[in-house]
Amino acid sequence: MPSGDKIKHCVSMMLSFLLLLLNNGSSNYCNRSSNYCNRSSNYCNRSSNYCNRSSNYCNRSSNYCNRSSNYCNKYSNYKNSNEKFKFEMMNRLFLGLYYHFIKEQHCYVDNYFFA
Image (cartoon, rainbow, N blue to C red):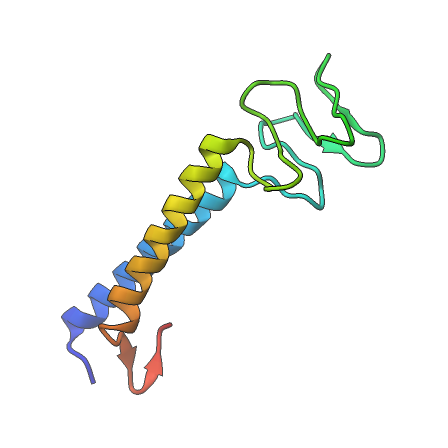
């Protein structure tokens, strides 16, 4: 069985990865199924095709909310190219750290792997 320090290290790394992943998803990802642009009260309802702030109309074909930072690209499913790049880089970092620290360092207790 691994030492207490190694278990603490593994749990700490996993929690860090989870927080990183959650932060990525909430800040950069546009949910295609709900047609949602993630600023508060700036919700695009697919059935009515309307964003409920004044002059914030959603075009069904482009899935666009017309505030500059609130763009949902229906093809890439990211708000904009900068957010897409940031999300992809953070995702690669997450996966790289995951495989290095969790898989290669064998974080386990009594043969039950954490990951």
